[in-house]
Image (cartoon, rainbow, N blue to C red):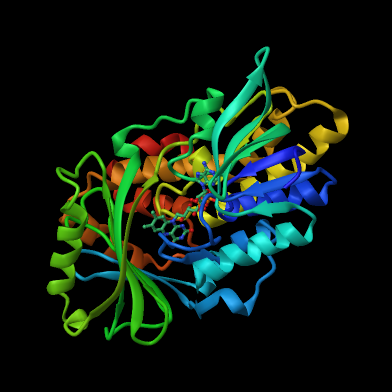
Length: 395
Ligand SMILES: Cc1cc2nc3c(=O)[nH]c(=O)nc-3n(C[C@H](O)[C@H](O)[C@H](O)COP(=O)(O)OP(=O)(O)OC[C@H]3O[C@@H](n4cnc5c(N)ncnc54)[C@H](O)[C@@H]3O)c2cc1C
């Protein structure tokens, strides 16, 4: 690691590695740091990834990190009605279940190949300012305190991001915009290996249960509950254990691992930049509030932030005003969808099991040609206008 960089990217998840890749490709002297000693380890993820978003974020597909290719997604109501979203209807929304550790490492490799320096086991601990201007970062690199000078910091440090807080960007969100998750890798279960499954209703208040197949008898089986509904830390696990115990297909299930974590499911933030700092991915709270998917959004925002950082270095302007180009780029791609899906999530959190049954059987019956949250809302409007009253502006 050198003593001085144009751009330091904090966090080597999908957002950080993609940001570092594009900053380096644009000619900026770039450092990517990761606090863990191995990029991609301790996977806290269902590992579902839509194909279209990969194209959008210009991530080359590599068989190495594909665990299983899906034909579609299945949404299942409490009463057992189901609705399939397959490739014919959802196109590129259908995708893969990936090997997240290998995926993250592949993205870091692309950053390194583009010329970014990479330091693992290196945590950012503080922003250094002189006369109100950022001049660098304090790091703990392999146990040793070091400082590194930089002009721009890209905060890609995930859901528990500190870079945003240190820089004074308001990333606080309400408990109702947080999902508390627990996931098992289960083997020896019966499943449809070609469909990701989402189970809605009172089995997972304010959220859902997912089954994402890794192969013919193994899947990531997880639950996300609205944090405002959870009464104690162990509750998501209790809900998931109860659902598994009552599911005949999981009668002989064996656990291979367990992970827990939170994720944001909020409406887009007002601002994710300030002078010399841009936030990407989970640090910028860009997870899709309906699906919980955040990998591709992290890559997409990382790409845009990396490009803008390189441009800012060329022009010698690292101001909040200059970074509006980044704000425009990511908002152009994601803002409308994130906002609409946040509204849909707000509504879905309060639906009864009977209403879920009604809606999902309706969607199965009307057979949409093209599936998206907007088309689903339009179909609901036709038959149950009372359920989408608040969405009028968006339809
Ligand atoms: C249980 C669960 C299941 C999920 N399932 C899916 C799914 O199926 N599909 C999907 O698309 N999304 C899913 N998500 C969301 C997805 O994991 C995130 O949206 C995605 O990881 C965001 O990428 P990122 O690069 O922004 O952040 P992260 O992947 O969180 O990366 C941040 C990195 O920063 C590092 N870091 C943090 N602080 C510092 C520091 N101070 N110094 C140096 N490094 C630091 C961390 O170690 C980490 O490696 C899930 C989330 C959870 C919790």
